[in-house]
Length: 114
Image 1 (cartoon, one colour):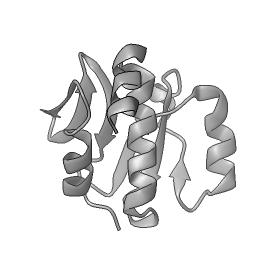
Image 2 (spheres, one colour):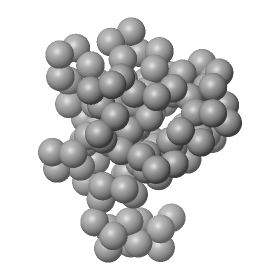
Image 3 (cartoon, one colour):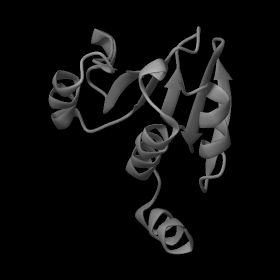
């Protein structure tokens, strides 16, 4: 099971990423754009993901992934149960979400440095 602390440790190491607390929910942003967010009970992580691919993702592993609530369907967003993923998968999901919102030159520089 992945914890918020593990996500925090990884996300804060990404360029331009910072943490905020909004209505008792931990969120990670680039500028004003949220790319990772947690449920209040910290059991579910929402993350940036292409809208056109999320139904396939959820259908492929419904025990792990969930569609966002109806009011969030307009966003590039999907949910994952933290107890269903490991640290490697978490890093992949967070990194891909970060890449969606950070300037391409920042992502490219991070890839080169990594």
